[in-house]
Length: 119
Image 1 (tube, rainbow, N blue to C red):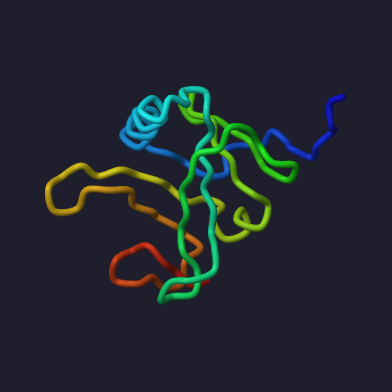
Image 2: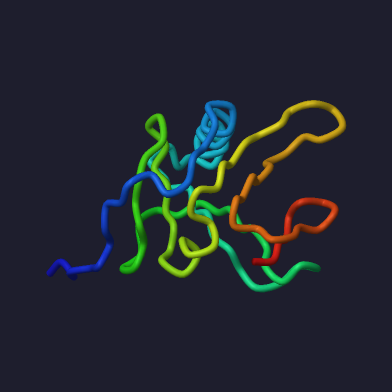
């Protein structure tokens, strides 16, 4: 018997650059989860109060917003949407700064490494 959830399609709450989309899709392939979802979340912790968290999920949770960017399925929980709405997720692959970067218009301040923020 299927369980009804509150999962809802949402307008694009977060933008993901083409470079980041390509990198996430490559990671999903390597993990043998090409149909997986990218979860983007804000969690407590870090030197500025909140930290960004990225993960892979097999399916949405009951209170997730679900949207797509260039075929990449993205999950965002309602609580995180309050502080991450309008954010741009990018990926840099240069030698000095390889990794994901977060451009969050809601962040009042960030730490030096860019992985935590305060609102």
